Image (cartoon, rainbow, N blue to C red; front, side, top):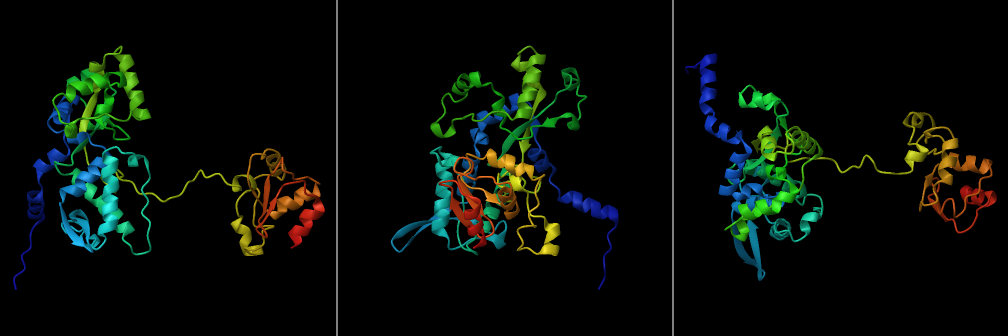
Length: 365
């Protein structure tokens, strides 16, 4: 059998022939704010919010209906379509998926569900993560299609003469960090008149809405340019370049994945310190007298105890309580409404002053 060896130049030409430069130019389109207004006038759907975009994406793949046990069920082909991520295709979850799509439809129409957090709850293996992965992947593909096109903008903070002379590089443009809708650049007090003129003669389904404000970075650039041009908005808008936006989970554009953890959660460890893991190997994990490292000297908990009159409960290590008893400190309803002893998980309502003997007897139990 004869083996054909291709040279490096031939392989490069082969790769170049597979590329679609016309599609690349469409996906990386840039233009002025006036050019974007022309796009909005021809296709108002480019200004849709996130819920409207997701709902339209699901509906664009088609639906079919069938009767099961005298119930009319709708199958949304988006979740089982094999044109993308065939391994994540979902079958047999018609009712949960109907409830999910109804949530997006209600939020798209502004019925109030857009203000809520959507929680997918179910047992292991019920396709919760698969549904999320499919929606994320679908949004990436939908943003690359003409029907799902959306836009954002970039700033140029240099001299306008350089821009008009064509001496500005792409690296000189500063993308909006939050990828806002370009229509947010229209001033708040001018939006009603602007929308009335833009939506004149349009049906309710094709009316454009402007919701939201600029992010702090864009707002700073906006005010800086307005001061530079003495409040002339038409001169300020020349420093804005509208660009096509493509969703990408990998690049953290439009889609973000994070772990459900709040780093600023307020708990007792900010007062008492967290576990000293270096001491576990010496004393073991069950010795709560030494595994809790105080953040500062022992004077800090006493100051904290006197200022926690509004706390409903507090976790205190045994070393702090013993030191408080040694100093004959009274813990009453005014200074600490409820005390939780970590050693025995005992809850002591502070309905009255508790003496040293009472706490000591409870502690020894």
